[in-house]
Structures are given as C-alpha cells and as structure tokens.
View: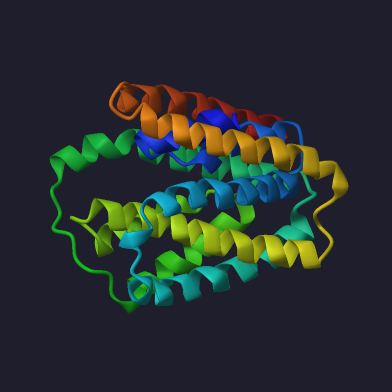
Length: 239
C-alpha cells in the first residue's frame, strides 16, 4: 500500500497518506498508523525535494510553516490522549470519506467554475496552516490544505508548488515525530513497519516519476478514490 500510495502521488497527486490511512487502521491503532505515515512522508518528501530543491523559496513559506507547526502541536496532545481509542477510527473514517468524495467531485465542479486565484492573505495562511497541522498531525492526511495554500501562492509555477508541498511535509513530519519520540510513543514493534515503509515510498516515488508519461493518472486516481470511500465506510461502521 505504501509503494502504491507513493507511486500514485508521483503520477496523479493523490496523497500517499490518503492511500495508506484507508487500510492500516484496520490492523493497528490510529496513532501507530499516523506515526508510520509521518515517517514515510519524510523520506518520500526528501526524494522529491532533492530533485526540485532549487525551486524552494524559504521566505515565502516560512510564515505558513509556523502555523502548520502550531497545528501539529495541538494534534500531538489530541493523538497522545485519544490515539489508542477506537472512536478516533470513526472520526478518521468520516474525514477520509469527506476528502475522497471531495477529490472525486472536484474535477467536475472546477470545469464549471473558473475562479481567479489570488495570493493568500494572512487570515487564509493561518486558517489553512492550522487545519493542515491538526489534520496532518492526527491522521497524516493534511495535504489538501497544504496544496490549497501553495496553489494559491504558485498558480503558474509548477515546480515551486511541488517542492513547497514536499518541504512542508518534511518539516512538519520531523516536528511531529520528534514530539512523539520524546514522549516515548515510538515502540520497537513499529520499527519493521517503518523500515519497509521507507523503502516502499522511495521505490514508489522513483517508479512514479519514471512512469509519468506512460500512465493514465486520472483513471487510476478515480478508481482508487472509490476504493478509499469503501474503506472509510468500513472504518466508520465497524470500528
């Protein structure tokens, strides 16, 4: 699932975390799932950031990252308190269903409505940053808020957009993992999953970049989102 998620993120933009988090909570706690996703996001992000590092504009993303890290701090306390409970799987299922449905319907509405993109003001940066931090820190799938911010910031700069998302994932994930490591949340039993996940995400990203012009990403993305909808219903109904 990690390899598939990284591969699909490379060719279609669908989040690695969105794919992984739709399945792993069926076999482990939400907290362990999130820690696994955050770790592999670091290595997946590094793969892309190294490729496009020259497009990073630190001054433009610094303020947004501060808001994201504040959200991650809030998420840390919530996940530490409720991460072992089954009820959080229901929350995850509901949010996952909403995100997958949104991504399925977005192309249809975006064709009908052409809205002029504006640079994000401070209120927009704060709102999207806090939401990205909290949701990303809780479930590892805050990328939709990050992507919304950076598409507003870089509407016509594809590589700056791509690398900024990856840098955001790297910094925020390292911050969250550091908090959980200091709190003793990362257990030895999780290490084999982390190692396999890191290898899978690097391979998936590399293969995805090489397959960029040989696949039909929209068809793959649509079919996968339907499967994620089914998985999210399973989480809500049977957790």
